[in-house]
Amino acid sequence: MWPWLLALALPALACVPNSTAQADIQALLAAGGRGYTLSLCPGQVYDVAGPLNFTAAEQEISTEGYPTGEARAVLRVVSGMCAVRGNGAGLDGVRLRHVQVDGNRVGNAGAPGSNEGNIEVGGSNRGQVVEWVRSFNPRGWTCLHVVEGELACANATIQHNDIGPCGHDTWADWADGISLSCANSTVYNNTIVDATDGGIVIFGAPYSTVSANRVRASTRVMLGGINLVDMLPWKPDGNYSGTRVVSNFIEGGYASAAGNASRGPNAARALIKIGIGVGPKVWWAETYQNTSRGGEVSNNVLSGAFSFGVAVGGVQNFRITNNSFVGNATFIGSYGANCTQWDKTPNPPTALLREPDSLVNVEIAKRDDYGWTDGRVQGLTCFVPPPANEWAWPYGGGGFNADPTTSASTPPTPTPSEVKAQDSAATRFVPATCLTLIAAAMAALV
Image (cartoon, rainbow, N blue to C red):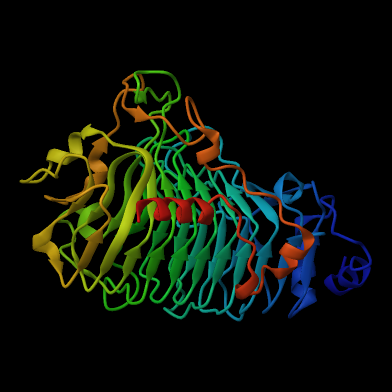
């Protein structure tokens, strides 16, 4: 069918059914022009062999009625790596909303080996939105990538999404949850579970705010919770000017069975090696002797099992204050083979680690629960978790021997009025899972 005839024929339908060929769905986007909404049908699965591409500014791909949970339409990758692409030219203000994206990665089938993720947005565009989206099992390196374009991406909003699992925790099979490389952007109130590389990885993204997100290791080992460790692509190298990571809740693994009075085993060995990593030395050791500049990491709350809660090395003009721990936390792991490849080995696991010789004009303050350890910050992902049967994991997180009244719970389903109000920054719907926990934890520590 000619695209213009298809565009005339299908708008009468409440939604575009999954019996429609992908080429015809793409033709609707091409013919629809600026502001067109591609409405998918609730509960239906759409197999995509290559991405659906936005074609004009302010277009939207969403599920009819804006449902949440399993009622959202599923875009399932059957060929290639990417399900939705919105990083081309002229795509200001495009929106991906209320859908699920299944990368359909089968088993433990080797390294992702791709520079694409389940969702590719950003580019040299402004004002794009990804919200109320579930993205999981990517074939590539990330569940959601907001790319910088020609260092011109700005004002993206990534909110209310549930992300993960992403990648496997076997060597080089990792994948990120959210990969942010867009300036002046907002990453708000997302839940990221079992993103095996980094839960949220910030590639500079100057003047962006990452807040009120929940990152958790449940059944996999995660290298990092929230990472500010990459030097590229924003100029000058290591540019985190005005980037703020504030009021996030990061959970390592918890005991999955009984052990002693305070700790138990974890069948999956789940933990987060670095809860929050700040500076290139944390990740890259001496490979890149560079410095990151200008960001803030404040008022974040951590709980569960880590090798390092917060680690800082190779930064200048940063503010790192009032990050704290709530409930039960342990700092565990042993030196892996890669820990001894340099002339100096990194510091053993600890709650808060900094390397004073690599810090310039850095404000570091803490609450009274843990003190900072001064030590060697050098490629801390080299640590390996204890054996699954070792009593090393704390109780908590709503799991074994945990108090459910103090643990995170499933976010409540928003009402229609809350969904309608979510586009207003002043009236965003905020589930209790993250902000309530953070507020209670911070109040208890004052």
